[in-house]
Amino acid sequence: MLLPNKSNNPKLSPDEYFKWEARQEIRYEYINGEVFAMAGGTIDHSTIAANLIALLRPHVRGRNCRVLGSDAKVGISKSGEFFYPDLLVTCDDRDRNSTKAIFYPTLIIEVLSPSTEAYNRGGIAVFSWPYAIKSKFFKHFRSLILPMLM
Image (tube, rainbow, N blue to C red):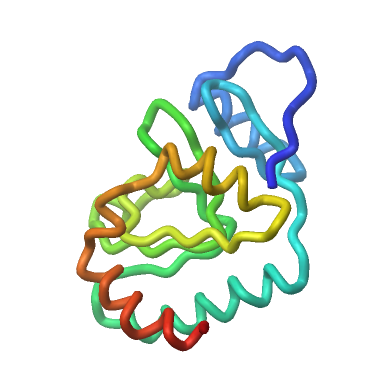
């Protein structure tokens, strides 16, 4: 869940955001030049995300893919919108040496809760990655992993 930054700070460029966030004690998402504090999660939320990471890891082993948790930032583009999904998979060589954000995710998973579902479906869905849903990896994930979660 995002907590709005209520101060009257000027909008930040992506570079200013990265430098500023590196000095903060908590994480912030970046939308249209504004920063939004990330709220803490719950034990249930963390358990679900950890279980998904554990389920995904064996399926990407040997495929030149990485499974990353909620500390990995995803960038919509080099110039804007940066989010922290609960977990993601990247198989793109362009992300191999990324240190600030992943720009070519193969799969993004956000664990929904009643309090964040409206935002996640409304706000983040606007910035979704349509190729993630069409990827072979996602189809493999959907057929093998999702039935285990039901």
